[in-house]
Amino acid sequence: MKSKYFLILWVVFFNSCATSYMTQQFKLQNSPKAPDYYSEHSWAELPTVASELKSIHLPDSLKPLAVDVFYVYPTLLTSRKDRSWNADIYNESIRTDVIEKPVKFQASAWSSVGNLYVPFYRQAHLRVYYDPYTKNGGEEAYELAYQDVKRAFEVYLNQYNQGKPIIIASHSQGTGHCKRLVQEFFDGKPLQNQLVAAYLIGGKINADEFKSIKPMTSPEEIGGFVTWNSYKKGKLPKRYDSWFKGGVTSNPITWNDQIKTNFEDHKGVYNGDGKLYPKSLYIEKIDGMIWVSLPKIPKRFWLSFVKDYHFGDINLFWEDIRQNAQLRVATFLKK
Image (tube, rainbow, N blue to C red; front, side, top):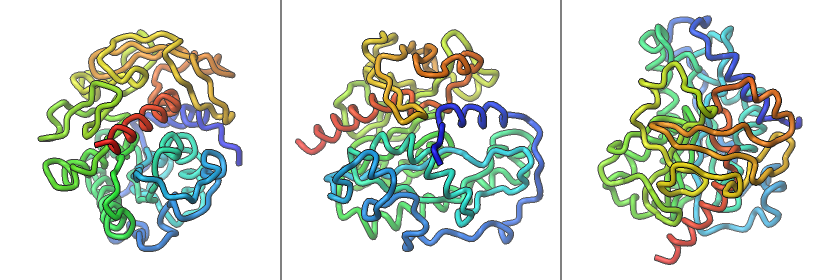
């Protein structure tokens, strides 16, 4: 299936951010079957297994790289009619969505940089972020999702890493889980010495979120984190004060403290048609988010009706991320 991710995901996210969802009581015993991360079947992407992603982005894809990338994808479980609290990773439709959408159009930004590890996990339904669902099953569902991510990372460390440098990459719900992962496994711990960078995208991260891992403010800096949230230029979301304001905002084009960029600075959107569109947008940093101009891409007319660019936090800056990750890896390996 040819996924038009850039357009499809905004439709999904835009239409699913409602306050009314069908739901049910959370019962741990009724949760979907847990992943077995010692089995390849519980991974959406492993460097030792051939995949469509590798054939697209890495002709010599099975050659081991010097760095690993551990990526955790965003929320795809969004239907208002879906009563389930957590995703069933053995459901073929869910597995296909993960591979055809975030893996193909987000994780791929790092696929030429490092050995890519993407665990399937029992992600929590979108409603966990909204009242009254948060306190009525949402917290338990979210914790279940994190425990999957944590187990996947532990298996990755034990079975695959072998002391290689690590990039942590994530989006949205994945960033919430990876923030905690960085706190528990890297921050002030021996594994911090292996951290190239953490790309914690699409979630609020405070400057003091970690004890010894700081925001990175230059393109070649290593050992810290970058983060941003994207919104249409000149607009603010309803939950701006509680969800975004005060959070660290990195510049995903220049990777420094520059407030504004020009079209010429932009390396490229990776669009749903599988093509790269450079010099197609500019940004402006504000408190807690970046304002993004309407991208110069095919079918941009439909995007003119959209304010929330959360769907495109990564693929709007796909080539910028790829080149920056390459630079940080090169810097790390020279240490």
